[in-house]
Image (cartoon, rainbow, N blue to C red; front, side, top):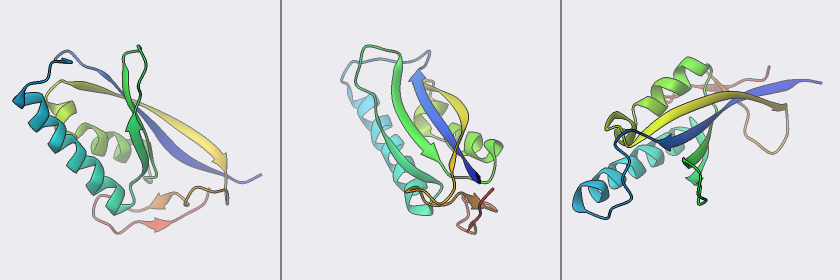
Length: 119
């Protein structure tokens, strides 16, 4: 069976996590959401959303980049990660090729030049 590799990203509470509602976290959250929207628009991220339980995991997403290093670079470019609100945990995930997910990308997803590929 042919498998495609994606990268699961967990955003965990970071050292500067706060659940307080103030203008600073609100502004940071807006920049965080814009970062997610840009990655989805580029095709580098195919799903993202919050985790709403009592764990330290605050978000979950799926990258379809060519490499783990590219997924890590994109995840760590998130303003909320850079501010220490979240920390990134990434895991390669393999699933049967040709399923319901769009095929992984080759090349750089960050500049929009990625082409579909199967492994």
